Image (cartoon, rainbow, N blue to C red):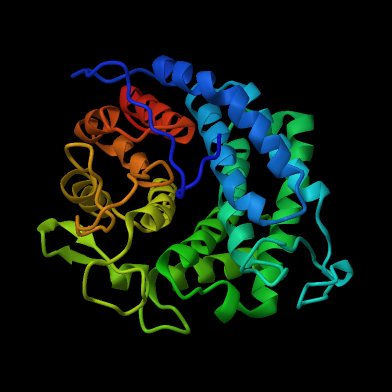
Length: 357
């Protein structure tokens, strides 16, 4: 099974219900696909082509979320194994013949079409936002006290700080961190926000905080920010509308598939004290329920509700169900579901039934 926004497997829940589906049911649905997902993900994690990590990101997120929802380390161990696989294939940039950087940082190139066989910041940031989120799950849970998990955590955190964030920041923050689209910059804001929590180095923490705040409020190379992009939708004044192009204020706006990256970051930042408010979450929920969720089996392409898309929500919008039972109920009957969707819904169910995170 390939979890990508380009090819979305469709699965409907077996029955409609006015009651919340419990974590146990989402786990059953996830487990039904887990072996196939794992088989595909193991292969991708051992690839030396970083484009495979873009798709692998969904599995890292899915297994991490199932651990968060259930507390069962069997899920976390799968996500850890994928990250170990990626790191084991990393090589010094100077040893990568087709790299345009040739420095001492560890990394990968992509041989797939359109990348010039170079190192690609998008592919790495797309996966590592979820690696960073996984590390926070370890840091904030009981496993941080376990010597084996703690050692594993420290190893992965060091790689993340040096060979992901520092590497691309040093190579040029304006080009590789403060990207030219909202969703691509959001990946780095996500990583930076998590590293603010994770790092033990105060100088690094200050840099991470600055990057996250810049993307949220005042980009150094564009006259906008994530906060600056958000405005009341013309189709629903209680909903948020935004464009993926910095400074653009005309429709149709951000496409939903990539907009998931924006929402995914903002949800996690909100939940861990990153400055996004309950009002922001309510407005995103309104966008989801009135403009993004289609009817009659049709799914819009853009956040203003227009166009024809593929219905992909698992990478971000689905996380909004954790804030409102009515949103979760709508998502339960949503027509485009897969393993990542199930895991996010399991987290939502856990939060809703326990009265908060």
